[in-house]
Image 1: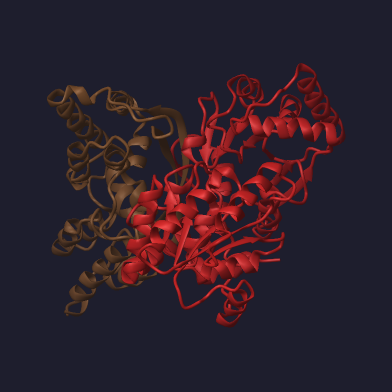
Image 2 (image 1 turned 120 degrees about the horizontal axis):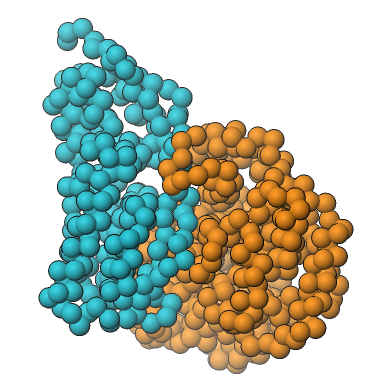
Length: 223
Length: 406
């Protein structure tokens, strides 16, 4: 092995915690869902597409996003539910792109099946809109080498993984997860960065994701 | 009295550290809770553990109780029932008296909180103090008010809108209000008698005491004998299962003696089960937490076949014990039971029976649901999550935006 590469700018580990706030609005049919989705705050689109991951990140395969879950479970529209469920969120660089795609899927479905627009669920089964208020906290440690980075990764909570993998990419619009970004720009670990970028955080559990990343880095370090 | 550190074996070091980090931003702040009673009832139960844990985090948490006489509490009981959607006669005089007692407490009480947490409708009108003292005021509604009588809700909303925020247990309970509405689910305490680990021998003794056969499957529902919990429907479920599987049914709960309706239901349940020695109807006295714990742990399947449910924490209790659960998709239950992942959600008697059979015949499947269930509760419904949500709420009241760097 050559000389250990040292980053000029260290990787600063953060964690995040969410508070859920309801928006006091509900939809009883697709038309109402669509109307609200068009103007909902970004933190609401994020909440409904990531809540399951946050609450059920120990499960695999991951249950779908709230929209898909409601459309299938409450509205009973399996085709649309499948389309919403199978969206590849990794394709989107930010929440606005994700919102546009969600709206398009529902609009297209409604154009083909206009009768679904006003098919309503009984009272008590409505879709309730909520949003996340996200608090970001520094964990108070930083790393400069790949070795230090691996050690830190093994130690951090799933909330921290969650922040660096999801929030930074989609909500802060960095376009890529923090880990890959740092490995690339600071350590010039392009191959490793791409491998981590290609891990699908939406079909892995958070713990599984963490283990895969550790494995990849371990391999890079020790062959 | 439990300390935060005692929860570390359940939730891990990082969770406890996160709580300390958050609390560090609130050190020295006074958090004052006001409710209607110091003993009995779910709210007092919550405050009993919540207040000391906040103190453990270095926050000056206080708890005060309003004063009221019988007449006042009869009125607030009516208000409570009407929020649940029950028909009651609430007169203009009742409202006047409700406000009068509120004003009396306004004069008598010491308001010291940087954050004032007012629980349920009894002390709701205390928010009048906000105009004079400022600070942050939060109304914590523990009640499922989805079917609230509209004129009553409109009246109460006149006070609720003066708060800075309201807390509801699920999004489904929230209202169209001009203030922030935060969702904080209730939680269970893994260290309490109802949820702590029990020795096998103790569980066996309890089964023996109630003459339950530990060698045959046990299907259990723990709940008050209340129409909304549908105990008669549970017996029907059991009979459908019993046709194919030799099982026993345990219906255990308490609190029927002071409730005439509950007494009636209990009699109906007893009548319905009289001829079947495999149905165990257990009216448990208060302070039977360890017995309930043992019954849940001994169960092959736990049911919560409620017609209507508040949050339904008995479900969380069963999941925490890794029991496979079949429960109705009502109230807060779908938050706890994600169909096919952490349990099974049902809508009918036949469906419930079908699921119970499925679980009894497939122990591996039942085990997987149970173990997912425990993990779900560990992540989302333990007291530490409850504490965290309160901390985040206080922090958010002093900051702007949906993305907050601390």
